[in-house]
Image 1 (cartoon, rainbow, N blue to C red):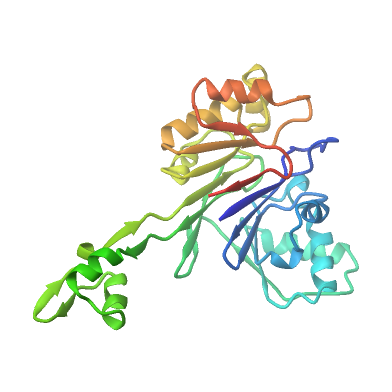
Image 2 (image 1 turned 180 degrees about the vertical axis):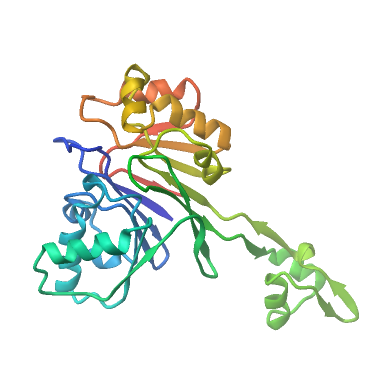
Length: 296
């Protein structure tokens, strides 16, 4: 699993920071969280083909989070995108996306499906789930969580010690079912261990609320906006954003393992003070940079 930070600015991009977008790469999935202006150019810098994207999670429909959608859709159409693009977003997303298509002449169309999300798990397959919870912003806004499912890993040394042959019996044990071999009952825990799935949470554009902690609980990685430092806490409250201190409080209270700050106001020439502010409350924190990659 790898995260690529394609854009880490807030409303106004800077020379160093593009509008918000983060790409989560997991096996055959490319899950793009928001699609700010210039996202497809950032993909080129990151050496990731746009056709790698399978799903787009829209946190909300403010321009700095979606202005890159028309260009990306056009590019996917020109590349003969061979699948149905799934676009998830808060209530009203279907209408908003149709307006986007009406506003631009996109000659090369792709197949797509827009799914409106409110709360809870909205996608699940054998390998992972996607969950959303509403945030508190000036427009409908969601936080998202990618949760890899637990897997059972067979310990071959134990298998050999019991004399178990490779084949259907091992398959049953890996699925968590007990088997009988030579008159003895063998339980999964005798020959295997549970590998816990990784959890990654994305919280963009919100004021502090209880859902922040709920969706981030025990996550391996929390990607959280820190638009302002505490010096500008009144502005954060006014515009319904988080400070670096508040992001660290969420990480602490949710017991996450690592915190990555992003979505910085253009007023800050560097993010050293923001990172230091958060680190006073939470040790494992870093301020994201454009094109930064994290492997989990």
